Amino acid sequence: MPIVQNLIVEEFGAFVSKHSERLIVSKGDEKLIQAPLLHLETVLIASNGVAISSDAVRECAERGIPIHFVSGSGNAYASMYSSGLTGTVLTRRAQLQAFDTVRGLLLAIAFAQGKLSNQANFLKYMSKYRKESAPEIFEILRAAAEKILETVSDLEKMKTLPEVLSGERATIDDWRFELLGMEGRAAQTYWDALKCALLANHHPERESRQEGDDLRQSEYGWQGREGRGARDPINSALNYGYGILYSQIERALVLAGLDPYAGFAHVDRPGKPSLKFDAIEEFRAPIVDRMVFGLANKGVKFEQDERGYLTEGTRKLLAEKFFERMESTESYSAGNTGAKKSFPLRLIVQMQARHIATYLRGERDEYVPFVMGW
Image 1 (cartoon, rainbow, N blue to C red):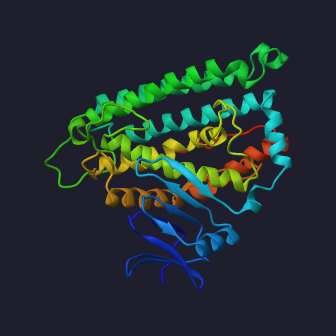
Image 2: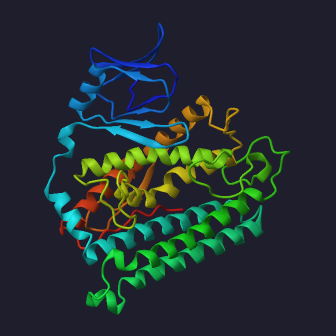
């Protein structure tokens, strides 16, 4: 029986049950997947019409295996955990107290710096394949990356402004408008550069395409970044990937003892997991953007049904590629020595969540966001 770490259920009408030491996904009389509980880390239900037995839910809860629910459009609408995982107190008290201090402001700035640094590095990663084949696109991507990095430097300067150091204006509420404005302008530069890359001419006579080859807009109909409700293939794939990533970020935060609903840069609203929205930012480009544009540049078609939703087969492909990307390694400094080693992105996400917790508790001088290489 194969090892299954991330059980993905995307078949309409499927039923998840527990038998002996494994979960079984069946449809009618057919057994689709068997997942030994010994190796299982998450269950992702990514379709309507899926049923799960109470025995399966209880077994997952007792073993600390979260069950995540993601809609076909990528909306991560629910997660189930063992009640014991939400019983921490000290970390959450520190998290709530930090909101009204400079520590909360510095954390929000670090989240933004991580997001923008990774966007810049992803543009550099894409540009290196185009230096010879498409020099104009190479220059556009590199110029956009440098412009984004200028914003990262501006955010660094914000930390040492006199009003921040004096405490006169030293909370996230004092700087949220400026912070989100800077982040938004840099993000627009990022998506505009990616659009240019997709609009570039490609060479249809090639029998195969490398990850860095150019695409035509007509292949995917991509007009630029669009969030929830998008119906074009690229944005639909991005939104679906982000939906799965949200579930992984929430799991990491809960395991680190943090409250996913008490954020910093994102405004608190009832039912809005603001910290999850904050913490996901540094991982969007290295995990989902790289996965989706990598598939697109290889000519993979993100098939959609007549309503504009991704088909079951495409959702399955994206989920599988997502977890493959989570197992790929990146250089990362896990300790205080500054020495870097290679770790799977799955572990880096969890370690970063723990770093948020230790920073908020005052056990770490600063929160350093994860920045991927290129």
